Length: 428
Image (tube, rainbow, N blue to C red; front, side, top):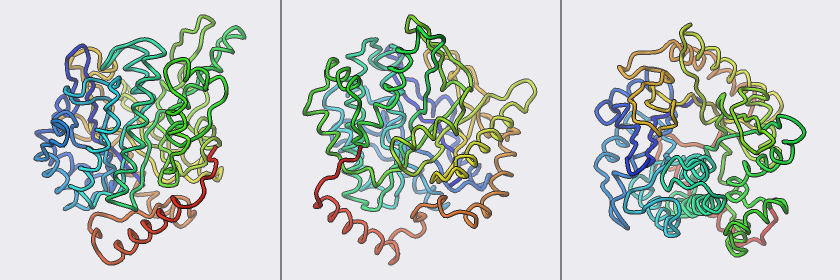
C-alpha cells in the first residue's frame, strides 16, 4: 500500500487552535488535493475530518465538510485511512487530562463509522506516545504540563480512547483494520553515566503500544505507571483488551526520532544512527504484528535533492525490513503538501512554510513528488509477485456492499464472536 496523507494536526497552544488544514489551505483546495493524490497514482490516503469542527459536543456533530470530502474520496475509489484524532480535541472537551475523553471519543468514532460504513481502515488516535509527550511532559500543546503524572494521565486516557474506539468501530464494520501510526523512537546513551536513563526512556517509548496491545510491561515501568496515577484496575483493563488481531503496527520514522541522552537526563536530537530498519525490527520483535511505514519526510534543501535522497533511503529500509522476513504492508510519504510551522513543532504562529510535501502549497509538484510517483509505478506490480507479506484484506470503496464484501464482513463478525468467547490468552 503506497500512501500519503493530508496533514490534519489541530492541537491547542496557549489557548490558540493550530489547524494545519487551514494553514495548508485544504479547506479551500480539497478537491485539487484529491486530484493530486490521483495524479501520483496513490490509492491510500491518511485522512480525517477536523475533529474540532466536526465534534460539537456529546452526540452532536457537524458532518457537512466530512460528507463532501469522503463522498469525493469514495467517488474516486481512494481508500481512506481514517485519522480521527490528530494531536487535539474540541475546546468543549478541554484536553487529554479529561477522564471523560475515552468514552466520549469512542462514541464519536462509532458515529463516524455509522456515517461512513464503507470506510474500512482507521487510525483512531494518531501518535499516542507523541501526543501525550508533547502535551503533558514537554508542556508544548493542549494541557501544557510537564510532569510524569500528567504524562501518564494523558497516555492512559489517549490509549483507552483508542482501544474503546476500535471496539465501537468493529460493532459497525467487523472487518475494520486499525493502523496505529506511532512514532518509532530510540534513545542513545552519551556515555556510561547516561545508560540507566537511556534504558528507562527506551522502555517508556513502548508504553503506548504496550497498553494498546495488552503487552505486559517490565517491573520498572509497572512501578512508574502506578507511582504516577495508573491504577491496578486500569492496567488490567489494557491487559484484557483483545483487539490486537485487528491491528497493523504503523511505524513513523523521521531523522529526529533518535535521541542522545545526557547523564543529567536531558536529551537532544541524535540524527539517524540506527535508522528505520533496525528500530522497526525492535518493535516487531516485541509485538509480532504486520507493519506499515506510516510517516516520513524531509525538508527540501538548497540542493533540491535532500528529500529525494531521504525517500530513497527510507524505501531501501522498507525493502530491508521486507527481506528480513517481516510482514510489512505499506509505505507513506507524509504529507501530500507542504506543512506550516512544524519547524517549531507548531508552538509558534510564524506562518513559515516547511517544504516537506510531494507538492508545494500552490499545488505544484516538488521533485520528491515526481520521484515518489515513479517509485510507485516501478514497484507496485513487482512486490505482490515476489512476496505474500505486502497485502491486507482491504476492500476498495467501490466494492462496499457487494456480495463478496458482505460475506467477508459476516465472516469477520463470526470469527470475532468466537474469538471473544474463547478463553483469554496472554498476549505478552
